[in-house]
Image 1 (cartoon, one colour):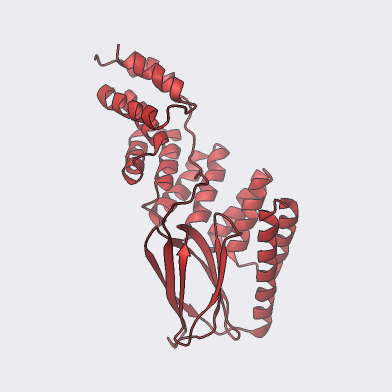
Image 2: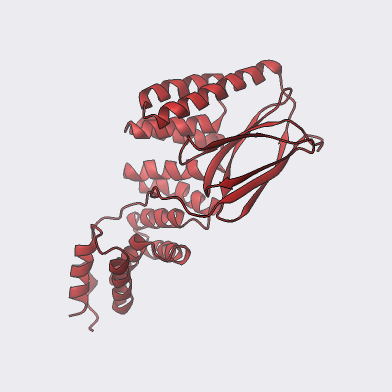
Length: 309
């Protein structure tokens, strides 16, 4: 096999496609547990806890803390969840939590004293939020948007409301509105993996790869074991002309998920540009083994035929 000039071959390479996770659920479940206390560290009993999946709003759990402020939820599908805590006399709190496969995720939560009028507004907002989620699951997206907006009027600092509103706008293909909602969600909760990922995706789809890059980088920092996070950052870097940096993330993708076909394709095409033909061939062959019917399979076969001449 001879080393070839990459110029001709690179002209054949299709544009990078960002990874959007598929619908299949992992077969293993996770567990979430923790303790809720007041600002002085005293345990709080009967704190109402609502846990809503970021993947599907129909998957949610309602539980309360025991006399020691403890809570446990078992049998959870791996993924990201919005979790909120409410107790009369205290300011409610919401955050994002990552439940992993066959693992225990632990949380320590502190609630601050709050005013009664604020508590009522937030409680009403939560009811609207759950109603909007139900409408979203029923594919009544326009109605869901209206209810999410009502919830936001009552509780304008809840990042989760803006995040779900962004998902609804995304479903309606209202790209600018979705982007504005995700941006607000990130502003209110910079540590949300899902909000940073969606913001990066919205910007990348708009062709603003340089602007998308810091959001994808943040997503990787927040969830370094997520293969999709690395793949999306790699795709973004490739579109900003940083192929070496992109390669590192594509390689990390297949390290974390050895059957990630699209990542092997990208590794192969980058290796062609580096004139590392044996490595390129190995990656493209692996891609075809994993995804023989992929839309890029014909191009991969054409590249391999050329490289093996």
